[in-house]
Amino acid sequence: MIGKAFGRARAFFRSMAGQIFLILTLGMSVAAIIALLVAEQTRRHDFERVRRQRVIASAVDVADRFRRDPKRIEKMMATHSIIGVAPAPEGISLNEPDSDLESLLRARFGPQSQPEAGQVPAGLCFPDRYKSKEFVAGLVDAPRPDCWVVRYTDGIGQRRAIALSFPRLAKPPSTIFNPLYLIVIIASSAGLAILVARIVSKPLRRLEQAAEAFSVSLDPEEIPERGPEEVRAALSTFNLMQRRARAGFAERTQLLAAISHDLQTPLTRLRLRLELVENEELRARLLQDHQAMQTLVREGLDLASSIEAREEWSVLDIDSLLTSMAEDAEELGAPVRFLRGCGGTVRVKPNALTRCIANLVDNAVRYGGSAEISCARSGGRLLIHVRDHGPGIPADQLDQMFEPFTRGASSQPGGRHGTGIGLTISRSLAMSFEASVRLRNAEDGGLIATIDMKA
View 1 (tube, rainbow, N blue to C red):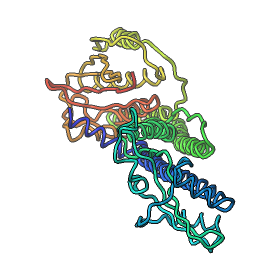
View 2: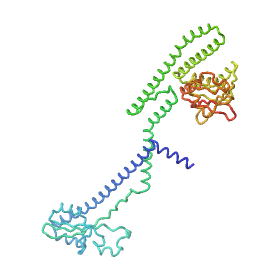
View 3: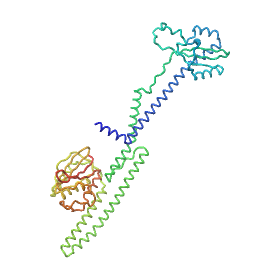
View 4: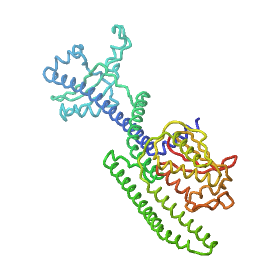
């Protein structure tokens, strides 16, 4: 089971749809993660910008108050009368000054201000406030506020140092590597990728099916030219190729039919002249050769008509057809039996199927002495078997029997009789309705010819 699943997965990823699925899934997942990283970075930048703006707004406000009434503001700061502002304790060193914040303050206060700014622990800004937590009712474990120390030189050349406190802003947690987000991203990408892969590969599947149908049928149905412009162009080109190939076959078969037809008249005149030969033995041999030539010409016409046959598709009851063919043969004295059917209907070209079965039955009676017809269904296919009880054919010669003018060994009953194109005609007829014909030797003797077609 595991090996079978692995094989199917391997076959899928080797297909174009599988490769498109893999590329799109990886590409969209990576793109989504990169977009999240950019959004995360932007959010952190905005977070820092908001924090700095609070510091700048408070520092500018305090500096403006100092400019208007420095004495009063110094007293208010000393008594903590201004919320969030206090004198910065002496001796605090800014180990990690905020260069961006200093640049913004320099732009607001002027280059002569020589600002210094940085965040320090709240306990350094307000050491007395955090010795005891009794004054914080219900907020014992609450986070301490953010504390910033800003130093600058004001307009009269005095160096100011203030401590600014703000309610702490919680830094937003990162969601980049959250398993839930990753699962959602990958699942969404995979769902969209498989949808796109199926849409993109659908025209190619149609083209593949049409090519397969053309490989087994000389008269396949044309592909509907639907889809994007490039797809319609490819399908139109394929249909044109089919039409040109059929035209080539038609020209070849018409030439064969014309030659076979034109030979009929001289053969008829030749027979009349052979009848005038006085030597009976010689006349009999010449007439036998003449009959063989006429048979060859007639079967050449049959081969041409089988290749060039144009017939509409229709649905027929397969058991009724097989039963009637067996009964008709028995009425003519041929040892033909219908053993079992498979029920239901099948979509074929009726005349082509009838001629194909008739050729196989004729071969079975001629070379095997009798014919047994049966039908079965297997794996979505319909199989028609025509069996004889003759000596069979060597296994290495089974495929050769479909080649034109190939006949069985002279040791077989009826061997070397006929022209050797009966099976060639059967195969051509089967190809016209997208079926195939194959031969195999039965285990208990005899030959089985099978017509394999869609159920």
